[in-house]
Image (cartoon, rainbow, N blue to C red):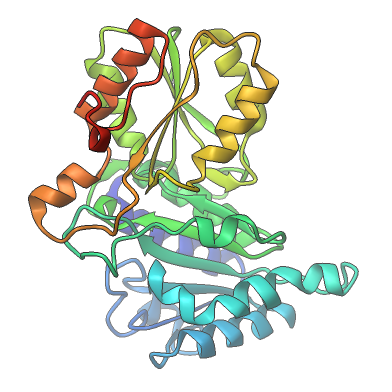
Length: 336
């Protein structure tokens, strides 16, 4: 099993799909000559040529619209959005056009398109280039949303995304691009979308994470005196309800850790489902560990405070287990 950085695993997944399927093409800013701003398409131009790996103008609306048309007429575009915020100028192409073609055509037209984007804080890119913005996509039927949590699953999830018949938004936490992991590769390594991964078994509490927060959760579990089961959702739309409900039914407690503002983050959907389905079994309220409702700060110390850390997750979870009540978040004087 090869060991590689997450950006290498992503490039490998795209290359392997391009080798197995001649309809897979790559669009984006600096994806060809430069190999991608984060080297996630490194080497593709040399192997597959400019007809299949295309640098585009700085016009997300233009090249995402081109990808929707290409997907509807027989290709499988893999489109790179350099920072997830840049998707905003082309959101109509995704949520109004690409995601609705199958429905509007009664199933006659599919849009097998993958939109890749770097996301998240932690590298000092400040308020306009450090968000995750899953909420932009979650309430748009017709889309699927997945995220890598490291090199280990970036390869398999991306291969499934490219093979899918519907548009998939694939989020890549940029602070993990350089982190190495063992990667299973090959045609049998695809990870089904909608399937969560039990990263670590435990008995006292279930911790659900997604993307960059999976590593935070694992580090916390390794340091904890309690036994925590860690679930990496891997896919947010659709999310694996069965895996989460079965785990919480055993542990009786749920903590959700997300790199999202507290208000309207994706964890509210999971908290609501668990609380309604398992209300009589829970021994404590559902706890969400999030960022505050403020823009991502630029200063290093402020950015570190802003993000859910291992120590903060531990302190919040300990309070929940010890008292059976919800702790306040740190910005309201809660345990840190």
